[in-house]
Length: 580
Image (tube, rainbow, N blue to C red; front, side, top):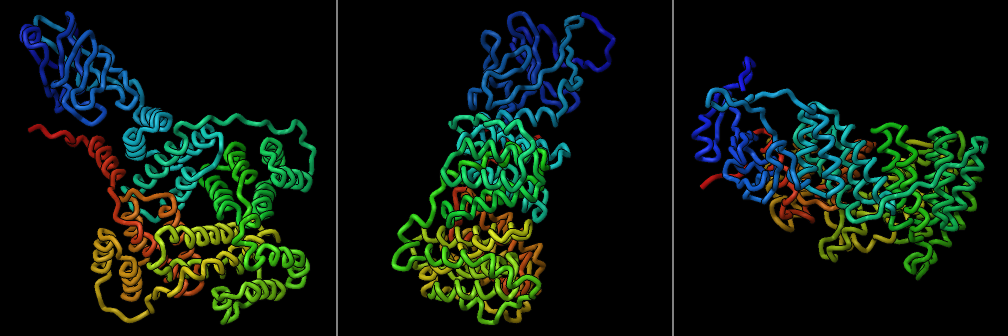
């Protein structure tokens, strides 16, 4: 076959190729494996798309090329894989001219890289393939795709393919989206990969979701829709609640929908150890990134988190030896009157307010909150104060406690943060209930600060902030360095270190680990509370809390980081498989 196409270059003698069966060639720097099989010449990229094994060392039989490393199989003529975890291998056009084999090493792309990686991300999510998710994430961002695009892809997948709805995977993805601006470029890729792989894991083996449609009417008032929604949640009717919620998304403004969800999430006490409210808040925050047009399916995925949630007033810890739920019920009867009395007033947090919140007297805590509302404290101001008390519980957590007790103070901290974020979004008297719930949990966590771990007090330091961060990184490489991690954070702030550098360091150290749901949440919660702190000391406590929590859970095996590193090296064209 003759051609005048100058893009083809000679690479081998046909006779030699027929004799040897294969040849590795590098026209214009491209490593290409050329095969003679069943009377045809075929050429493919020499790097296996799975993990880079040289395909020239593979086996060809009955038109199938098999990689010897992980046994990925490819249809030789087109490069398509039999194995979704492997990806298709690039093929190259070939011609034979006068006994010479020619290859076009730079054929036109059949699919744009960004489109290819978006398709591969779908495959990785569907099949729960970590390496595929990692390669797709890195590939997309390398192509200049904005992080919101894979984020939206993950949200759409997670809400569609998990019948039970919103869970830890989507919450992690939302948290990672929130901290992206605090991270460097490589760690942004790690953060998205972390969120997306957790979404894939959450959905693996789960039944898909089948929607309940909205009502056909668009004439129902927002107040009635809210009443219907809360009543359906109250009686645990998920289908009815979903239809109402989808109708509200279609007919109400965003703030009305958000108020409806936050009200339902506080109609009962501390649902599912705070997860239900936190999930509602994270789903809403996700829409800040991907757009309100995704609200229908995103918010509908929350319904079961409300209708099936455990209600803390049903737990003995909320009833005995003190009826805490009853104490709050009594206070809530007066909320409207208290808020009305405080309207137009300006509240200043009393000096002893934190001491009261951290005390062992629930009646005093409730009385202090009620007095604050009557004095004009807004939901945001009270939520801010209680979130600091919750952060203090983590920062002072005693390491003599059982390891699982870290989760207890963590749940209170993330719940208090979620309530605080909600109060910054909407004005709703119902959110005071979330503040009270958080404060009661701060009370219930009191014994986990017995004895309290020391929070490093501010002190002058002339150390190089970079050296302190080096020590902090090393601390995370050793087990049990909880108090040392907190001390180093304090020292970094004392020597004038830039908080942005501290955040980048904490983010990197977190993302290299096989961090679980709670640890990933803790970082984002701490960052948010640090940024919102109205005093330097409160900002200090938030960061100390994060560092201590991370140190308690590090180091790990770092399997996820190994996968991410392999994906990054492959996309840079580096060798992963080293020949002996």
